[in-house]
Length: 338
Image (cartoon, rainbow, N blue to C red; front, side, top):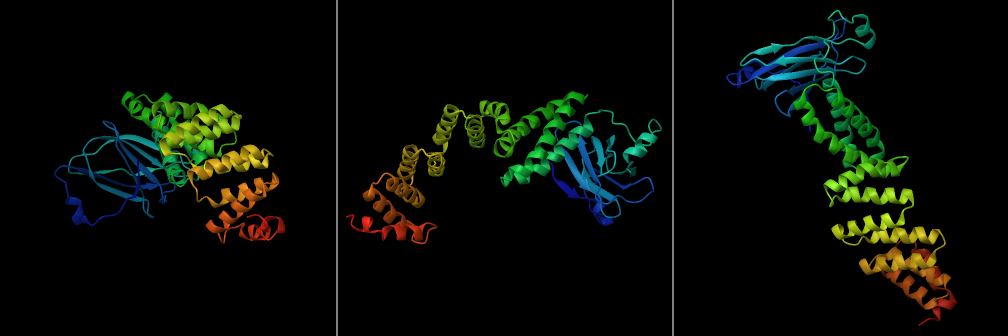
């Protein structure tokens, strides 16, 4: 995964390091008026293998990178509000390649079309490749924090842009390197859509392909459980839940939540079964005892009601339902139960 690195101005004494086997690149990024574009990004991508490096210019628009292998690169310069600048370059051995770049706004670029004021990419997919990867890099911290709602639009942008790049890339090697990235992003897209998308069922095709590649992918299975719920497909939900349980073991939270759903829908018998299963997996699951007490009370099983309320208070004396449980146990009908 590419990481953004601030391009630092180094002391002259440092520039001789590795000069015998590497080269360096330096320059300045400005606008048409000659003013520095602080925060402009530079991506240097090797053409011979899957390697790239990102730089960010300083407040003066300057950048410097040392220790570069003397190879061919695609240099992409980007900044918000400007047209990307893309050029094929070669880092010289033991020398500095100076690249001063003027970025144009879309309007300026159109007015100078054909004049050579803005470099036209030799490969029309290169800029899209860089843009798509950048969007995905922004999404990853959100995805890792399970912030799927905020990650989703960035992943969608990345997936769309990289597929477009794949269609336009002329470099077959670059296309070959991009293919596994698209597969990786497709999986993340499916997971984000299943957890936070407006139409969760739309994630299913992406997730099924990901599951085929890795049948033990727990996040994908969780996503497929959500898509099955969205479709109202109980059989599929049970299937993927069972597959997940073979990997993780039974999940008491999942059974408890199913019980709550059934109880709220008026299916007390089903809810009771789910909460009993919860306690088989996790006997100290206090809330399951409380909810069983509510079901038993509704069925006029006073002994079961009392037993579950007392167990709840034993496990969670200061729980959110402790006050209610204590009040119920004061009822004469329950106090008489031995």
